[in-house]
Image (cartoon, rainbow, N blue to C red; front, side):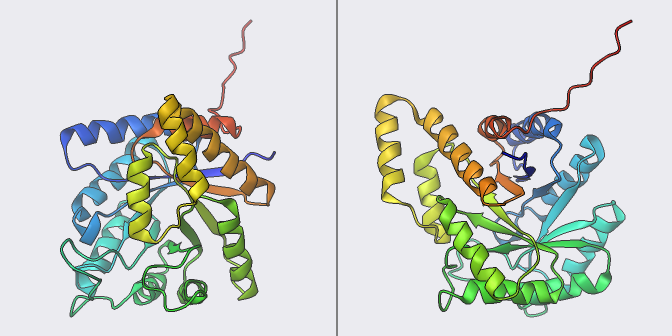
Length: 288
């Protein structure tokens, strides 16, 4: 099994306790030498300043290549591009460009009257600056707003054509889900890298709720497995084994990059990376 390139997603803290957890997470995972790490926006862009602070601090203190999430939500075009420029000024050259979720209380995304209408407009404007490597989201299972099964593939192609360099997928539970999506993208002429998003399962009930919100199908066998593991007190063991097996299957199918959604809880992600052969570099001292 070849050793994959890995990357991690963090989210910005909103409390003092969460701040400690973020920095503990970064300290635990930074030695694995990720190719990049990303920092999310809160729903509706609510953590815009916190995201900026986390991105610049991680880059400055840990020497990691940080990709900042940037969305179209609740901001004018000028405000959004100003944020991008502030990242560039801080030495941040990677952006994950997303439409973004609807603000809290809203049923669906509605563009700001003076803002970007969708992710395509945002990507094209950022690409025109020539200052960023642009990553975008992709949906291996139908997005809740998708008009037909191929919609997500065709929309991703438009995002790549608009200037995106690579895509990171929403999480999924079975390798075949990603592999079918990868094949469909190839059939439509998408040559840009598509990185599978991996969600280590720290809390199965919470993950199921998350999956329901974003349209990720939960296989019955997986729900049954966690029900049995909960009875036996072996949920952590099952989560580690399943995540490692999923990643190993993807690697065997030619996947070279894996992006882990850490939820700022690093232990399981670290254990899976170790199982895949991604370990901190050991510096051997020359003993006379």
